[in-house]
Amino acid sequence: MKNLLMVKFIAPIIIFLLLLFVAILIIYKPLYRGRFLNERYLELLEAKTRTESYVEELKNTIYVMGAYLESNPSLVEVVNFLTNVQKLDSGYLNLYFGDTVPYSRGGIFINSLEPFPTTYDQTSRDWYRAAVATNDIMISNPYIDYVSKNLQ
Image: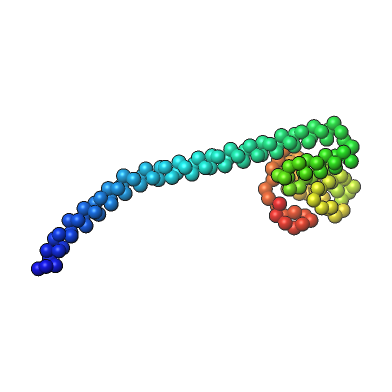
């Protein structure tokens, strides 16, 4: 009898709390979800803007480098210029400069990190072919470096 009285007293409270919980869940879940998704969208938009700005800055630097190299084709000046560009901006891991003749057949290929073996053929690389095909600045997918065997 005492247990039945206790159940009759507690049951409405439990039902009320359960209904309150369901009502709060139904009301606030869409609001919270929308707010959460909006915050994530804004974070992604900010990351996209920063990335595009960084890539645009790189492209502008490359255009300046191209104009300089066309105006001063001395090989010594080219090497000095590439070295200075890399020293001034830590965003450049490595700079390559080459012509259309493969390095293995006497062509020019300059790399700012380490010397490449004389058997290296830059014209057989995917990044080289893609750059020639676009005839513009091309950003390649990451690849395994020929000399260091590290992901670039």
